[in-house]
Image (cartoon, rainbow, N blue to C red; front, side, top):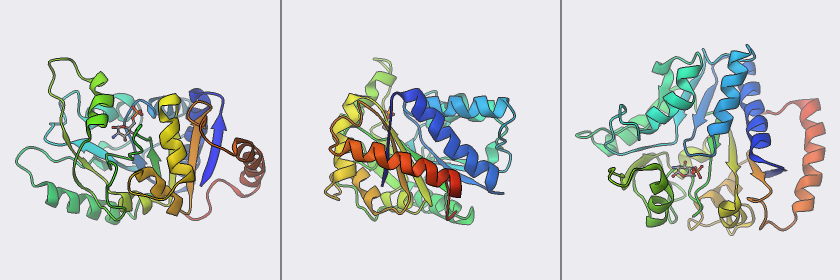
Length: 268
Ligand code: GLP
């Protein structure tokens, strides 16, 4: 796991945007894994900026989002489809027919939808770069603590902590779903690269559990210890509980030189 500590969230967004831009500019049919939540919003703003400046085009990009609330129509403002349209898709030249979410509308079978989503990812050639945030309880996507490390896209019951954390996004009288469709942990681990962003003190405990383990379903993000190319972008608050911070800072200086000479990617 490559841990990079930044001064603030804006620097994280700029760095993450570089990773995305390099992939999109170098690969003819890039496949991006996308995330929702407040953390990636500034990344999407950076990407829109780059698109408007003519620095990148999404015209050949296919995308797969991590998760979507169950039974929420995509016209609903709380749907992650709506979030993606508002924060990215409506502002760049991506072909919306090539943007996928694990949607399961009312009346559809979540088991079939999960299998279908896995098939679609495989048909696209697999995910090159998966963007991730992390829940305060260590979840990635909506893979809550004790999710199987071998899980695939499926229906998942949200924990009370996740419901509480996300309740800020719902009005008092608004329906807040308790079920969601999410890529599984194995689905995420299949991505060629994963880029996890975390900011703020309330993520520090989960970040420590993810980086220094133990590898355990209790902290789903700790599964990234098994990934060959996991890059973790943190601000100082999110990194605050990590020991060995000096090492990460020093190693990053070496990696900057290595990346300049050999590029960010080596096996997509
Ligand atoms: C949500 C999403 C995750 C996200 C996490 C953190 O519930 N399912 O994909 O990473 O919680 O969200 P935030 O970035 O708002 O802290």
